Image 1: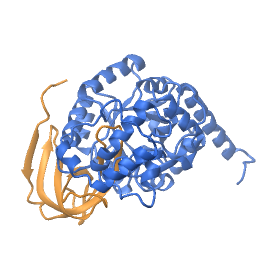
Image 2 (image 1 turned 120 degrees about the vertical axis):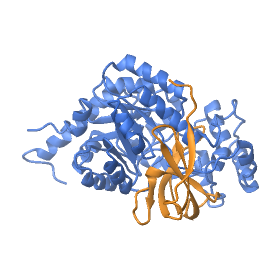
Image 3 (image 1 turned 60 degrees about the vertical axis):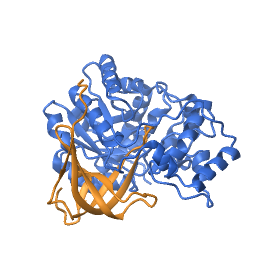
Length: 91
Length: 369
């Protein structure tokens, strides 16, 4: 396998900026074999990062209107494929 | 019967005998189930890319040309990155005090080893991407995404003659992944172990089957018997995804204490909560889940803070092998896991029971409810 680190390329998508979206989110739990699902909703800032090739795109969601009760951060990264725009536009 | 109910879209796609998919973290279980005519998927979420490559090589030596799968938990959301030391400082004093009280009430010793916490931040996206690249390079027959949408990898996988299955907890996620062209959908109900959603297996499997067209749907959540498999096929699924079923099998590398705990457990002995990690998951009940479920317990913190609280407990439980402290991700079907059987026997028993159920249903004088 390649020893090269995964390339990450940040960018800005003006078409996504300001759009309200929901994210069927979640992820693995550090240090364990476990994971959890959780839902978020908020406004996309337009900032994104692409990991690797083919690109795996992630957007920043801010102004969160739905988040887990104990989630203390003001933003969350969301995988593009798990985002649903309120207007049902595909990210 | 005129048609064999166990010959489904899934068995045809994979070229397997029985529509039984084992999800496991143990390579020996993969070997046993695949060689018994089923299909098996090895969970590799916590392994490094090099470890994953080694596991794939080992499995290929055991199963030859038979298909198998590798599962990664592609994250779907991730908080901003933060350094471990900074995160630990943010844990409220009330929670640290409550943790100390739990330790004192239950005489929980210090762990012998440091908790195996991954580094924070980059783990979610970059680590998962590096893991995924190994799966692509190795051309694993089936890649399953345990959480996030694998749509971005479909073209690359298909060009390598790989199949991609997506595991979903909501119907809209299934619809999205079907439109993108995944090869099968695993519809997971809340009865399942670990990172399950809130929708019941009976509801989500039927909903997804109704929109899946020719794409196979695999039912997940609480499936531990042939009766469950028969029901899943009747709901429109083409097979079942089973995890808890294999935790206590002969080949499983689970601690014997966990195996005995599972063999004695019923559906009421699991709990769906956030106390372990801050994210919802279903596990067996234990001292930790009981304590955080009490009315006077603080509200659980979000991941990763809650995990920082529970990490020492988990490590101590496993280091000292205390039955009352140990737990495992476990589905509600655990009540039917009652004997430590070889995996091959589990497959055979499940097949036989499924056929018996269909024989009952199609008999001239069927048993009526």
